[in-house]
Image 1 (tube, rainbow, N blue to C red):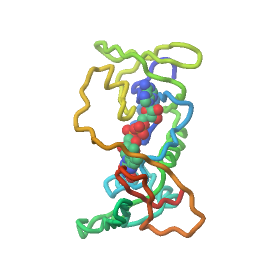
Image 2 (spheres, helix red, strand yellow):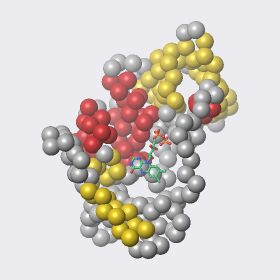
Image 3 (cartoon, helix red, strand yellow):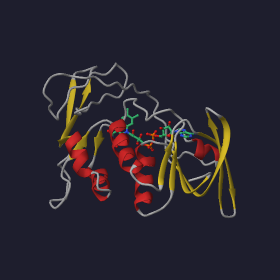
Image 4 (cartoon, rainbow, N blue to C red):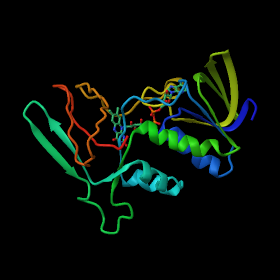
Length: 220
Ligand SMILES: Cc1cc2nc3c(=O)[nH]c(=O)nc-3n(C[C@H](O)[C@H](O)[C@H](O)COP(=O)(O)OP(=O)(O)OC[C@H]3O[C@@H](n4cnc5c(N)ncnc54)[C@H](O)[C@@H]3O)c2cc1C
């Protein structure tokens, strides 16, 4: 693959990797561009609900994901100010014939690593870390992408470009697109903690006062 790819995916998060894997499995030449030097490990998604589990199955990742993760039907919120514990049972509301009647618990970076391993086995897929998208120019039959890399600024061209570069998406800004929705007035803190104790799906979570509290037990 030279400076041209059929599809460029911006962002090596779970969304970018899953899109890239789906495209590459269809024989499309795909390149994932990631600004950072490795998959981000900040604590974020830990629970994947049946809709996501279904996608993992469609892409042939479910068996490995189940071996890595914890299958569970519960998680809980703690409200430290008044000691309230809100247990959520996700079986409530599931259709009786739901093929994936459970959630999978494991860290988002582990999901990204799993998908990346599968992607990198395909000859028509490439993952480029340290490639930060800083410019886009759309022309009649594709997109020119400007990138900051450790070796300086460079350009690539693709027929299509997928922006999967997260909530502060550079692609969205470069296309001057609005970010719909609303912003919570409270800010949230997130942390990961390791435990040597046996796992239970219904977890405890300690949260600083004033943050929306929640917690999930994962295997890793
Ligand atoms: C505390 C917390 C808990 C959460 N819990 C859950 C949960 O339990 N279940 C769930 O389903 N979801 C959860 N979410 C939401 C979930 O984390 C997001 O939906 C998910 O991260 C979106 O994935 P993504 O691949 O779109 O973006 P991201 O994971 O944000 O990945 C975007 C990638 O793009 C890269 N990037 C950014 N700018 C550029 C650029 N200019 N050029 C190249 N690359 C760039 C970034 O470095 C990053 O690697 C949680 C979120 C938070 C914050």
